[in-house]
Length: 217
Image 1 (tube, one colour):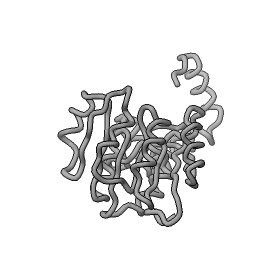
Image 2 (cartoon, one colour; image 1 turned 90 degrees about the vertical axis):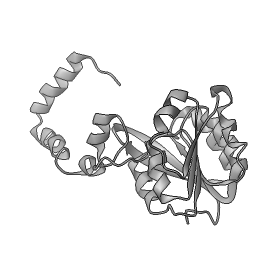
Image 3 (tube, helix red, strand yellow; image 1 turned 60 degrees about the horizontal axis):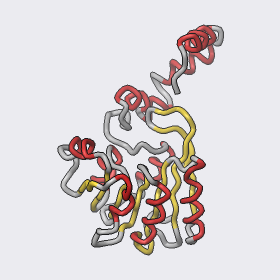
Image 4 (cartoon, one colour; image 1 turned 180 degrees about the vertical axis):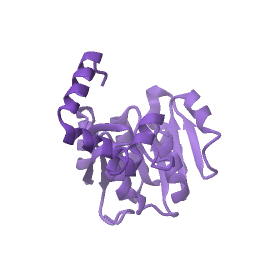
């Protein structure tokens, strides 16, 4: 959210009248959650990275902490939306297939994705159908792009019996339709609220799972 210069100046002046608050904010640049997670590096580069510049998903930090230790080389992942999440997952799983509706973004990614990854082009109006032509079902499907309700509904039929679906920005009212659909299909959910790389507003990443799932929930 953009604020006018007058509001920013008032905030700066107010901070100098609240030395404890100012000290706490300054300390985050030296030590603390934002420093440890690499939030400042993400903010500066406008890319989700950790403190050392390694790629992470643009999801909540609480979800990243949860999923990091549960990934393994037997998992196959499909992503609606690609980027640093693709680069984060690739060395930790068997394979990653992502789809994009932006050809320019695909061209940018081609030189950086590893050999166990593939990025597909899918037209914006039929974006969710990119998964339909795949030979095998997936253990993990991440929905983090356009047409998310449609993607969630399509994903169910392409999920392994013990597979999971992850929906980012699940706090948004416009995704209630997809969430209700999954509940009707017998999925349970875990909400991971918090901040994300380079972002300070509260958001949510949700894992949808069934019994005996690949994440051991």
